[in-house]
Image (cartoon, rainbow, N blue to C red):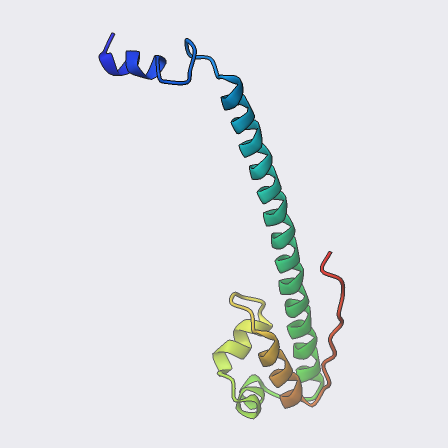
Length: 122
């Protein structure tokens, strides 16, 4: 056996490769902390996904409204001060999605009113 292998097996605080009660408690605490963080990450990811879907739905509705108004993408881009390629990408639901202020600018340029809904974060 190599000295390094022997050293690892007989590290301070360990009894013949078994965890001490202190080690077990520390591992349990770390496991609980990791579980809590994973739950928070999952909740945050779901909330962000809902936000992105709402913006995508809004841009799809604005595309329908643009067509109904007989406007071309270039006209809406010019009226809103946004880049034509961005408006095309947003209508095609490609990434990145517009932020809320850009969605309001699109609505104004098309001549429709955009409303928001406030909901609990839960």
